[in-house]
Amino acid sequence: MTTPFEIPFYASHLPCPLPTNAEIENALDITLAYDGRRVVGVGQHFVVKFGVYVNLMEGENMLFVRENTNIPVPRVFALYSHPSTGKNYIVMERIIGQSLLSAWPQITTSDKERALSELRRYFDELRHLPSPGYFGSFGSRPLLDDIFWTKDPDPLVNGPFNSEKDLNEAMIRKYIYNNNPPIRAEYLRKCLPFVFKDHEAVFTHGDLQRKNIMIREKDNQSNEAASLVIIDWEKSGWYPQYWEYCLAVCALRFDDDWPLCIDSFLTPFISESAWIQSLRLELWS
Image 1 (cartoon, rainbow, N blue to C red):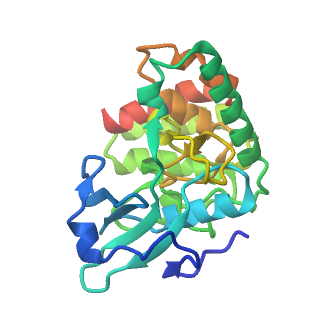
Image 2 (image 1 turned 45 degrees about the vertical axis):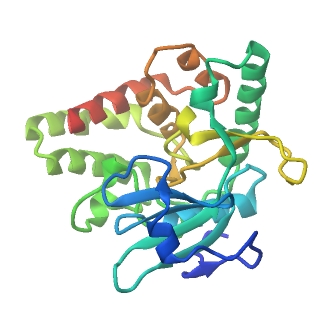
């Protein structure tokens, strides 16, 4: 399935009644609020991401991955918008546990190796999802990574793109859109085709950091066999093969051994990552 889900979406099986909007608004934040978005925990069953800038496509991405792979992702219970406030709501399963980021300093070497092996299985499976023939978000919609963002819609920057050449040009246009030097943009336009070429479109999480990998607490009643759950599918879509690795490298902090581990579960793209990191630094420095 590569077509959008029908919105509003409500799951047929719920652990308990969905929270009301009032309950959601009054719930405690579990992450810092940002850009008009909040993520709150409601009771023991629900996490809700909501706000005017929340994109319901994140919930569709989770539904798509859950239906088409064995990768553990939070169950999605509802996707809807509030007509009077314009706020979008993603009601999803609350994963009881801790992030791999917080757990990493305490777990043993053998536990780390098991986690890395598990991640390798997940991302190998993700890469084998059939390509829809374009670079774009689920349902042939624009890519949601910030490098393709413009205030007003511009398909030449936002996508979707029919070729890697078009995607490369979109990054150049974004560079110009951000008021960077035109002569530097022309230089990049000459260079990028030598590095960013012959990559297939593969389904990509798009923000692979340890904070987005949860270690689920063992529960004898849970049907999930795996211990790791991947969260935060906000920027997911069909990107070039190098994208997952490059964005993971951009997020590295080099304060422990994690940077030495990502090659064990992601195919490395060394040259591409150097160019992507340089480009992103120029865009947002």
